[in-house]
Length: 374
Image 1 (cartoon, rainbow, N blue to C red):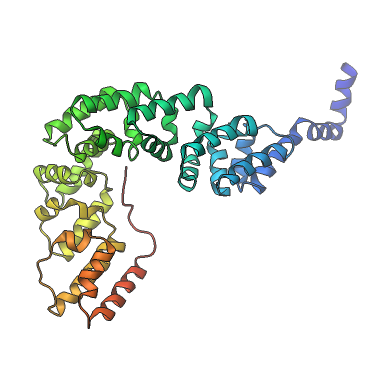
Image 2 (tube, rainbow, N blue to C red; image 1 turned 90 degrees about the horizontal axis):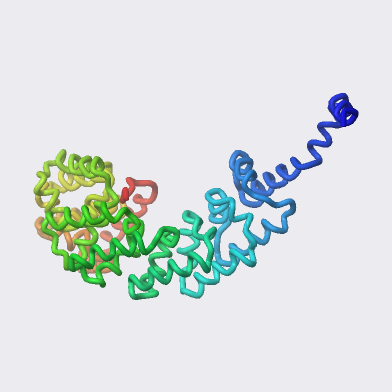
């Protein structure tokens, strides 16, 4: 043993060669594969290589091929590997394929589901028999529908990772106990699944708070209000209230707006400011009028509000419309209805109006203030 040690120490070049050609040669291959085949940065590849185990490209190639078969892009596959590299250690045929087949049999929409799984891949590391199927069955029974259950999983795959009965089931029961219709619950679980995984104690407190706000618990807005408040911290709620008060709203205005459209408390403070500035400074609307029509604040200024308002201004300047106009008719109606009422209805002016509208839409391309914060 001693002679071997002396030989190695006395011949540093031989030591280096033996080190490189033994265990460590696996790491350079893994790193190069992650960089060249999955497009990861060298830093990410080096970090992830410590959590994956393959010596040749056979295993990772099967992994990539499987996900591409189900419509995942290279970027989405790379995202899965970055978030949950341990999946590379699973047997592709015996472990991963049956899970993807299960979701396909349930009727998931792969373009949407692939996108969501690339952000929430944890579910793929769970047992199909012991976790995924029982959790899915619980969710389906709670919602009384495969359609609503799979829509929920498509939106938030990790809902099957949590204790569905303890969290989702209990929170749904809290709503039912207060008289919320099952149809309203089923419609909103797929849209805000993460809110239903919150602590039942907090969920119950929020339900009581929304009841105190005089919401009609038979209407969809009651559940929306509950889910939105669940997703907001107290400090974030107060900062949103302050953002509206800066533009002249009273606390009562905030409450009325929230009752009318709870989404007004999901809007980022920057978007609140931009929207209030436009509607008050450019359009001359009073704060109280905006509070009665809070849905307009959720709209894209660049892609909807400004192009449509430009058409209205052009018609107003020619005396073709009255100054008083319904905000719903101007901003909330569909594109077809808007064009019919404000463009097509004015025959001689229609070509110029349509050209103006298309020009404003072209200018709307590019980044804008984020619509939603939650």
